Amino acid sequence: MCDAMFQAKGLRVGRYTSPHLIDFRERILVNGEPISESAVLTFLERTTPLAEKIGATFFELTTALAFAHFEAAHADVAVIETGLGGRLDSTNVITPVTATVTSIGLDHTDLLGDTIELIAKEKAGIFKPDVPAIVGDTNPETISILRASAAAVGAAPIRVVAHELQLSRVTVSSAGTSFVLETKMGLRALRTNLVGAHQSQNAAVAIATVRAATRGLEPEWDEIERGLVNARLPGRFQMQGRYIFDVAHNPAAARTLTQTLNAVAPQRPMNAVIAVLSDKDWRGVLREIGPLVDRVIITHAPSAPPERQWDIDAAMAYCGEIGVNCVCEAELDDALRLARDGAATVLVTGSFHTVGDSMSRLQVSPFVP
Image 1 (cartoon, rainbow, N blue to C red):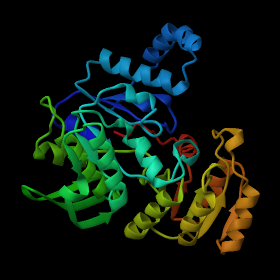
Image 2: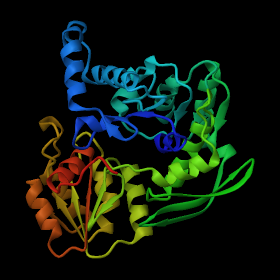
Image 3: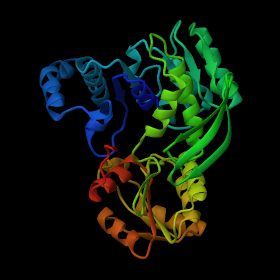
Image 4: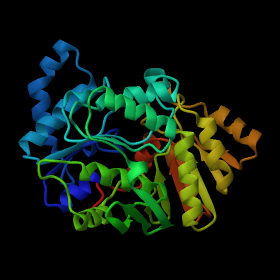
């Protein structure tokens, strides 16, 4: 959303995100165009000896590649997503124009801590002295932690989105999400093509982020409106024919997915192809999604590392325990074929690997126009 709003202002915008669905180049875009294969190869040829000498990780090297590409492409501004946490993340070498923490959930607990407080403090590590700090979480306890962390490093101003922008009249359909945003300047009726009530909250956070930008980067409201309508994000409730692709990989994301499914009410019967990584709470994902669909097809995501492949027999047994109609088809191609039989809607979910592998087989491009 930030990328799209800056582009609507006429800026040249870099975007760095992770992970990718199909093509590594999805991670590094300028005005929606992926970095070229030749640019990736040239950078690797030049830097790999040094990277190996100093022991740089894959993500550190990729971050350096992104920053070098944005410079070479003469980007006016870049939207940089942290890879993991914030304080020790590779992307945290920059001093940003604005630093935003969107929302906090219990994920990557082995690395970031096993409480909301510990995770919040890690993510707050991106706040910098005299740089606007945007707090996007709506939980009062988390807001307090993030605001205190921002104040401790001298971030200014500190903006709590939930206190400054009020949402109402949120309407969700297969065509997108519309809502009314109450600001200090009055009411704004807005719309995004991204589907789900949570996208209205995401929009509020994105708007607060771009409005806090300085140096002539701040979009005007007409540019914000155009940008929100143009925002696209593959793999997040992406509807393509009879398919819905969503990378929900933990119970909270799966709960959001089910809420969006209830709002959109896709055609029935609806089957779900699911593969979750073994180190995620796959039982929680099955509990959320299983009862909502007509049949679950348990499978493997071929691109997932062998050590992270879930136990499909255990998943089948758990479906039986909770009364979910479930079948097992270990081969993804066969699972997709089985899911199509007699179904009006096929949901593909559980991880980036599951969605990316399925999109690749179904020839759905991750580079959404």
